Image 1 (cartoon, rainbow, N blue to C red):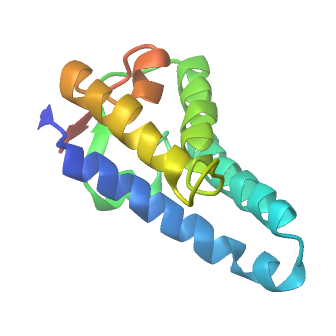
Image 2 (cartoon, rainbow, N blue to C red):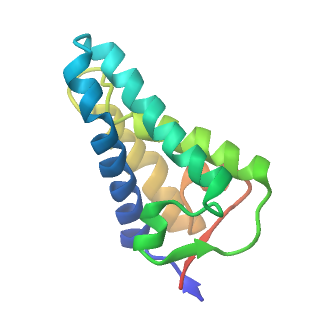
Length: 136
């Protein structure tokens, strides 16, 4: 086992977002209100990850494809807290204050990447009890 790279962690997240988006597509055509669409997309992302938390040995499809696993066995509470924080982090893709993706850029540049560089894990993993992933 070796530490997982920033690239692998980011790629696993991108894969999870893409899968969630594919699951969201029917709602995009059914629901016309953009705020409701965003909320549905966030709920889909949360439920997608929660289902893997409950039934997929805590490994999402992004982790499976990128050949990542958890360094240790973490408690269900840690992983559920992570899932909530991961979803909040994801939601920065959908909302902005001044221009599109401003919250996401702030989240990535000033919260996630520095935490990965310093602590070798994302901010949501660190807050959840320093949960880390390793490459297999």
